[in-house]
Image 1 (cartoon, rainbow, N blue to C red):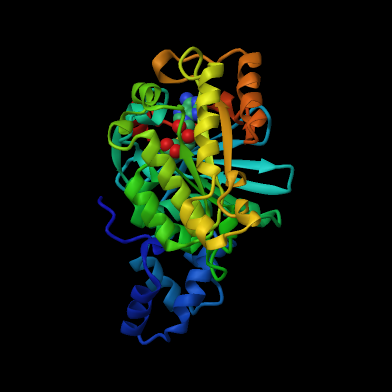
Image 2 (image 1 turned 90 degrees about the vertical axis):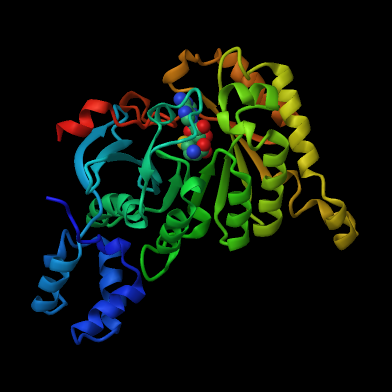
Length: 375
Ligand code: SAH
């Protein structure tokens, strides 16, 4: 049977007010309902015990409690990182990952699309192609899934990263509406500084995001110091090349005053040479130089602060096993790459991503063909 009720997280506050009015209920209930839905203490409509029973029943009849339904969870050998397979109402599946950090923080990696149209050569999700965009509710409910169990332990989701399946900026509206719910103090109350959107580098959408002026972090999947290398691994580079992406990153920094992280997947023999590190460092150094516009405006020695080199960070990720048969470079080579960047004054970190054994590392999220039918 086809599910026709929208999920409550796909219903705007205004729409909920209209729905309440039609039933002679006061408008203030809309905020109350949305707050409780986001808080995560209840398992379903019956848990909203401070609402009249008749209203709860009516809500259940009109709205699904959640846009996603957990099918299976897998725990990493490290005992911390976990991945959940979630079913959508039309039978498609997505994945979301919880990365707890010694009780100090709980990061959730969420998906913005089922599959992904970008087809990066090393990425498992890219291999699937795009299935469809997720709705706002389907994005938010991934966070809600984890929030529900954390709240029982007196914890909550503290950080979120759009680094799951899909290209967030190819589904910009739903992603931005979801982020606005996540940072709303009345709803999830996550600090915008703890929200990161990762993009393959869709330049017009990077500018759109900057124009929103939300103080959240942007990660840009650069993966190469020049177009020649990037063409061979990131198909969208044909549309938006390295120079344009770097310029858009600078505009983002100048507009939002936030840092940009360049993601750089290290692929043995492809983009891991010392000369690649030097070229990358040179380009980022140029980016860090203040623009003429800024110099004119600031006209002082302090003009290195805002939008200077300190606004850029490079995150080096050894490739996780996946499509394309790429291999990780030897450790010394990866360390040397990081060192070159650091010698140029660029903050660079080399990180082995968590949860690889359960295929929950970067770019490993992929719903296998058969699974989608099995459940
Ligand atoms: N579409 C977004 C989000 C993708 S996933 C983007 O391109 O940024 C987040 C990060 O994981 C991206 O930087 C992506 O390039 C990286 N990634 C993809 N496949 C990977 C792999 N096999 N190993 C390591 N990182 C990978």
